[in-house]
Image (cartoon, rainbow over all chains, first blue to last red; front, top):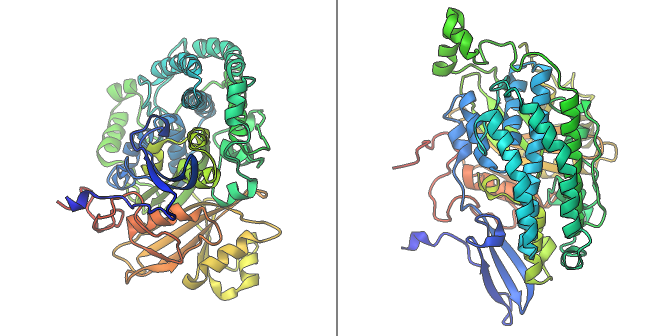
Length: 401
Length: 165
C-alpha cells in the first residue's frame, strides 16, 4: 500500500520537539485542512499546512464545459459565498464578450452579493466563536443565516448552490414579495449584530483569547499575499468594491472597516463592522432598485424567457442553439477580481474563440491567506493556532478547488 | 457586443507605468506587450522574470507590491507551449498588470519569484503540480493538490479530462 502514503512528513528538528498531527478531520480546521505542528511542550515551533484533500479538479472540468455550464461549478468552489463566485465568473465572461448588463441586474447582483457576504460572515463568526469556546454565538448566527438562506431559496430555488447569476444578467425575476422580505430582514439585522457584539466584543474571555494573538504586520501580510479582512485587520486600506468597482458598486456609499493591530481581535472587528456595512449596502440597493430588464439584450448569449420560447420561433431557435452548441466567445483573456468575504477572489478566463473556455483559473483568497498561518502561530501556544485558523476564515473547497 | 481589437504594438503602449519602469531597467527584458479589454499584459524574457518582478515591486511611482496570482496556460500543441502568467496589483495606485513568460515543451523551468514575494510559494507549487513547470530557487517545490505519488500533470492539455484509466 505504498502508494497510499501521500503526504510529506515533517521531521522534528531537535530532540525535545515532537510532531503533532492536526486534521484533516478536526472540528476546528474548518474542513479538511491538515496541519503538522512541531511542538515543544505547548509551544508551536513550526507549522506545515497540508492541503489537497478536497481537490476536485474544477479547473480541468471547466475546460470541458460550455461557458454557461461552468456557472454551477463556481458555486461549489466556495460553498459559503456561491453568489460571489457566480458574480466573478459572470463578470469575467461578460468582459470577454463585451456585454452591457442592465442596471436592475447589476443592483440585484449587488444586493444578493452583500447578503452572501453576511451569510458567509455569520458562519465564520459562529464557528470561530465556537472554536474558542463561545457556543452561544453559533446558534445566534445560524438563526439569522437561516433567514438569508430562505431569501436565497425564494429567489433562486436553492439554499446554497444558487447558480442565480447567469452570463448576461440573472436567471429569473425575483418573486413579488422578495424585496419586502429583504427589507424586513435588513431592518431587523443591525440589532442582531449588536447582540453578537454584546456577547463577544466586551467579553473578557473572548478578549483574552484574541487580543495580541496571531499578530501579523502589514508588510508581512502583503508579502504573503493576504487580502480581504485579513489584510485590512493589519491596517492596509484596500477594498476592491470601493477601489476598483465592478457591477455598479460605485453607486453605493459604504465605509471600509480597517483595524491597525493585525491580531485575531482586529480581524474580528473588521468582519463584524463589515456586517453592518453590508446591510447598509443592502438598504441602499433596496431604496434605489432601478426598473427594467434583468437580462442583457443579447439573444445569442442569454437564454430567452420561457414564455417567449414557447410562442416565438426565433426565441426557440436561439434557445436550442445555446443549449446544444453554446455560444462562441471572442478570443482573449480576462482577469476579473471581486471582493469576496474572504478577500480577492479572481477569475482568469482564457478564450480561444470557441464555445468552451480554454482555461479557467480561480485565484483563491483562502489559498493565499493560509500562507500567513505559520508566520502567525510559530512561537505561540497550540490553542492560539485554533484562534488563528478561525480568524483567517478559510474554506477548503476554495483552497483545493 | 463589440470588443475593441487588442493593441500589440509596443511603441503605442510605452506610456504604461510598468513598461516605462521595465524598459528603463532593461529594454531586452520586455519582448512584447498586449493591451486588450483594458488589461495590460507584458511578455517578459524568460531569464529575467525574477528581476523584473523585483523591479516592478520597488517602483517608487507605481509599486506593484502585491502578487495576486501565478498561473499557467498550456497552448499544446503549439510552441512555445506554456505561458506562465503573473497578476500584479499596485495597492496604492489601484493598477493591475499581467506578466507573461513563454516556455517551451522541453523540460520547462524558470526562476521562482518566492524571494520577491513569499506569497508565490503556494501558487508556484500549484503550477508545478498541475502543469509540471519547475521553479528554480523555490524553497519547497513539491506537489500541493495532487498526492505525492501522482503521475502526470492534470491541467496539461494532453492529459485527458477523465484521467488515465
